[in-house]
Length: 314
Image (tube, rainbow, N blue to C red; front, side):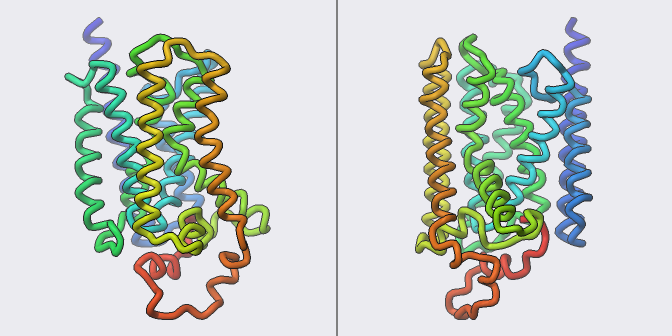
């Protein structure tokens, strides 16, 4: 039994390390050569397939084919969401830190931190991202780039599978699909909301969702007068509230019912509708023609410089 368990663990580690390497190389190539979106999509699907084969996959349904399909969609979605969220100083960094910290909290609550490889991984990720954020804080001196966003996105997706979708660190036995969906929605609301809102708005305006622009939720907040530092603090605050709600669900909710599902789902729903509503206020200000308007050099920030050069998926 011990040998079989050890082999399974090693298989998962190999799958994790191989996909992280692939994501890193893909991001590096994209930063250097501006690769085509479909090549990036292929690599992301490949990462999802490798993880499924290695045993790292969503396991909430009895039908394994459905679990595999949802896993691949999840991997592709989160990798792209983090890439798209990395559109302003510190945003992707602080959101990732809060989600990783939430996962670390779940491990602590389950008393499985000792001899847990994810404890080591999460400690390294939280520490490195915290150090990076010092230089990524506005005005930033370092940028994550696609190399960083692809790796961080993949790790967020993997951690999401292990500790949010499958909830392997749950201190209680009240497990249900609606409960897991709610936990995922609360934890990943910011990257999922930003990506969904951007794609929906671009499709409604008959624009390609694969062409970058200044129409993200962060940009709309910025154009409403919120500074980049305050946007980062706001997103960090939302992440902290999400972590607090997850803590309450894990420690206080012993039996999950439709009532808890509706109550706790209101939080991500309110966040989503609020961010979506902000993008609909004076949409002409941040329309696709905005780049044609003259911009005062004194108002150009590091974020603006990155946006002016943005031609790929973002």
